[in-house]
Amino acid sequence: MANKYSKSNNSSKASEQKTMEYYEERRKKLNKSAKVIALILVASMVVFYVISAGLFFMN
Image (tube, rainbow, N blue to C red; front, top):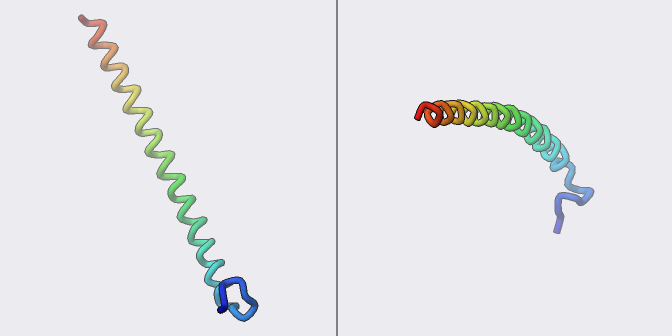
């Protein structure tokens, strides 16, 4: 049985390289979106904290 590491299976190396390039590109996009979501989350937490503190001190 031939597996992906056998010498006779040369086409899998090109496929593997393409897969790694796709993975790297996908990972970079996810990292950017994760940073944006984290910044939005932190900003919303700060706004909620300021509003809560303002309402607490008005009482």
